[in-house]
Image (cartoon, rainbow over all chains, first blue to last red):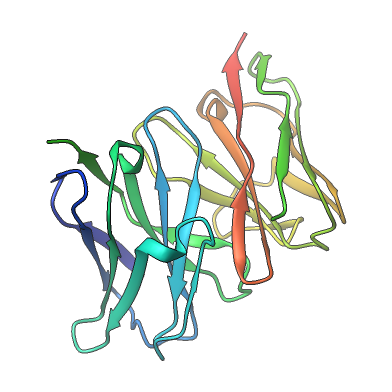
Length: 119
Length: 107
């Protein structure tokens, strides 16, 4: 079955750019699914960041839109997140997730990767 | 932005008891409401989608109901592994939001 795995630096300096990749295995990123990023600050709730379709179409959380770029690499079966101008408030566990066929919920999640913003 | 408000914040129950968790939306989300379970150190797990449909592999003791602005997740008889944090989530206008969570703890 489909599995997701996040990867990227665990430490990013303030004002820098956070970059993460989500590798999709057991299935194709070109399936009829959207692919999302969700984050969770330590001890807090979940926040949706944005999503992408294999065509390259994207939707972003308006509160983060000015700093977020999500892209897809079909040749590598993966999608990526870039978040610019980071501050300590961006410290969180970052999850990649698949939007299910019905289009309204996240049915498969990666294990998550902790990213700390600190000098 | 549609705000989801979950209640109670914490629910203390014993194994075998029935749990009822609530999620209220600031405006109608039709039936586009999902529920997740999250245990410490783990990713969320989808339980219910479109208000009342159990996700693959989810036990029958989990059920969802509601439409519009008021939704309920019911766990008919709590098992020890059900004690966790539960989140509701909606999708509308090409964006998603989550509730703040309900912690289900052992009494």
